[in-house]
Length: 313
Ligand code: MLT
Image (cartoon, protein in one colour):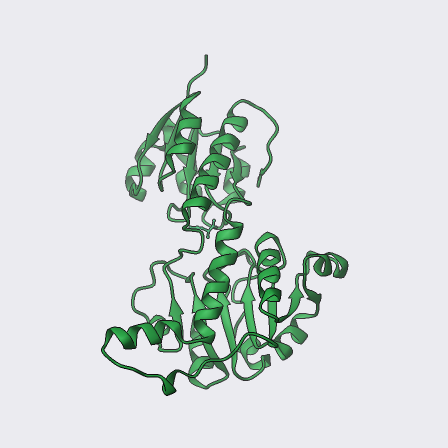
């Protein structure tokens, strides 16, 4: 029986490793440095990454045996897809595994932003009682603008509607009918900017979406809008967002993702009107278990030449 060797670079739940061990040798090198990875990549038939590992063209040039790269999660912006494709290396992901976790984190961020939860908690831990200073805003009756109405956007729409919000959706890859079926009223981006009290971004990072929310976009929004981003750093121009918050155009932002991760204590992260979390939207026990199983099964299918459910390239 063929035994393939699989390298895991950012960790994987045991359930996924057990599936892989049925046909592969599994080498878990969680947290491996880029230098060490370059030195050993030639030994492996498959690799599984999350977002930390950067799979560059230079790395792939050393990966003589590599047949498949698995992303235990959704975003593949850390993988050079063109270089993988040119080397006939298949890339697969686990796009359904983290949907609920990210949707729930998005709602948690929106509620926390509307009700100043992080400031309230920090003030209590500081021995204060800032009741009148922490006036919040209700979600009920507000307009919620969804940019991107894919798997996650759809689940976010459902939950926002449960709060009594009017949900608008912009997605250039879906028809109006599809957006409607996913629980949002289809609108242009301009109209979404002009009408929304809360805007949440659910698009991948690619040349089309990089800096999609820039200074011009913030100026076109309703004054006092609140922004939530659990998608990808780089979709928001962080300098422009900080300026928009300082000018009062944007009332607050809740960010789980950053252009550079970790970002350190930047002016944006430190700003009192910003809630920052360290890319944890998909960090639930359930989502990580699902991602591990889904990606392990997909990697085995790729190595065994079987049909793939989630081939990216
Ligand atoms: C994903 O793309 O799956 C999520 O952002 C989770 C992550 O990268 O940690």
